[in-house]
Length: 427
Ligand SMILES: *Cc1c(COP(=O)(O)O)cnc(C)c1O
Image (cartoon, rainbow, N blue to C red; front, top):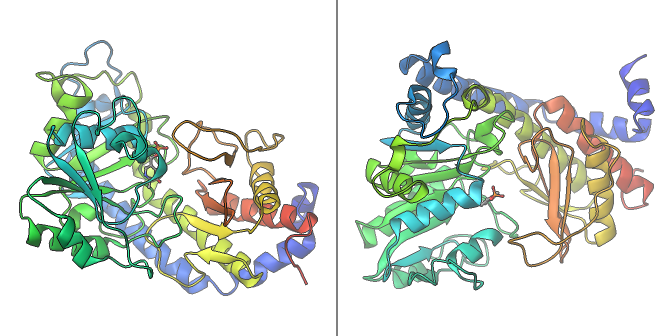
């Protein structure tokens, strides 16, 4: 059976497949650029693992307190080498990206301090961490105030507003690299570097933290190469490479990271405790695969933008823009469009392909959310997935793909389901 016939048995029509091939023929140069960056990042990870002299003995499981866990300590050293930071905290005990960010913030902000976001409203779940939406145990409850400088209408930094917002209380600046669920551009490492330099020119001792979720390995530099004191993310996104079953990381200065470890475990204990529970092989191997997996996801995002934009849908980033993260937003204009898109992604999955995604309430989000994911790791968004809040402009945020081939098939199936619902013009 040839590929097209195999695809037809899986629900993909010849018309959608051919549309995909047309689009792909124009993307060769961009895909080559992605492969070159992936090669650089692969070398970066490999070199770090070699310098840290990782051996099979470092994969051993520890239990209980996890004292003297050499494998855990070396994994953190590998992360620190890749991110070019003094220290790193990489733990399965960090539940998710929000937990990593909440840890970094609450460890480094004390009562009376002020937190500044110079890039507008932070990601939905961070709003409760900060107390923008009141929540028990928020930073606001502990006496940490919050200020925000919005982006200019064109999505650029409003430096005057940032300067005006920095005051004697400003202790920490939080910069979100990826757009999250907002209709603004994601920022490049170079742009983040400029913003950090500006904040430090106004207040030299301010701590600059970057929410790096979805940004790892997209560029050959990370925000820590551009002056960030802390870089924070989730292991079920890019750096886990699809293999990490849970976890988060914080890379940064020794002082900031030590405080994070004291907050995560307990004052006095810090980084010295934390059993790895047998997860080190997955965390090491996932980090090793992460550059290639991120490249697959990037190819999928660019393919989706080109397919959907040519059919008249607004895509953020657009089909030609350089990428700063793996997220692709596609404005589908209706709830029905979001449902059809997600149905296609779900139908293309290796796991739960028979399930139908429906909108539901999610902790941390203030509108209903639809999610499509047939993932090996629950909630993993480095695996092919799509989600979005059910609110105008009815955008789905599409991301991931452990292999480019699967990302491609998933996107084609989303077009298939859109076309079957009369929502995607094929002629
Ligand atoms: C995913 C994400 C987070 C945190 O997410 P979790 O779902 O808690 O892992 C934070 N910020 C941004 C920009 C994200 O994309």
